[in-house]
Structures are given as structure tokens and as C-alpha cells.
Image (cartoon, rainbow, N blue to C red; front, top):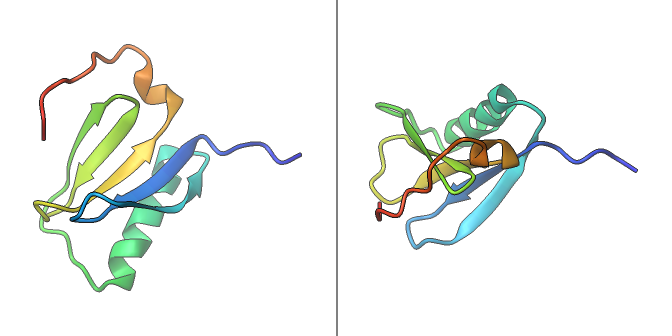
Length: 86
């Protein structure tokens, strides 16, 4: 049986629905999946901002309503739960 990847890479659309873009063994590989997705859309991000909430590392890349997410058990370790809304 194939070993499960550590990170799930997700794109959250402006309407809140989520699409899984892929899976990665390392955080850097997850970022490559995100970069490839932005390139496929011909999108050049003006900035990157990230934060961790409830086992998910969120990435804002210039849109107020669309986000990229890396989901991993690793992000639960030693992180306080943020109860503030985005």
C-alpha cells in the first residue's frame, strides 16, 4: 500500500468551495503545486501572506476572497487555535 502524503494542497474559491490541487511530502513541494496552479492561470501574485489556523496553513496571494491552503497534522502541534474570523 502507498504511503499517504503529509500535506494536502487546496484552493479555496471566492464562494468558499474548496478544490484539492494535489498532495505533497514536503511543504516546499506543496508550494510548488500552488505556484504551478497560479502559473496555469497566468496569475502573478503581488505578495504572499500566511498564517496557521486549525491544522491549515493559509496563503493569501493578492485576492481578498481566494486562498491556497496546506493541510497537515503538523500544523496542530504547538499552535493555538485562532477563533477570529478572516
